[in-house]
Length: 51
Image 1 (cartoon, rainbow, N blue to C red):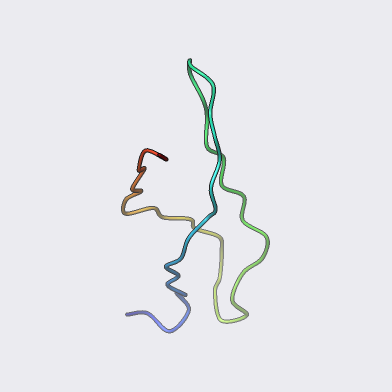
Image 2 (cartoon, rainbow, N blue to C red):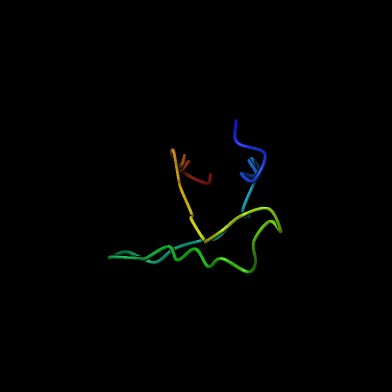
């Protein structure tokens, strides 16, 4: 892996949603000092029903 790339895996939290369409937004809040630019990649997201 490129040393300027930081990998993160975690839980974003829990939310109860109403019926209908919803949008997830990801915002880059900074960058690694070794990076020459900005890049946000998302390999996947897992949504689970809350009981």
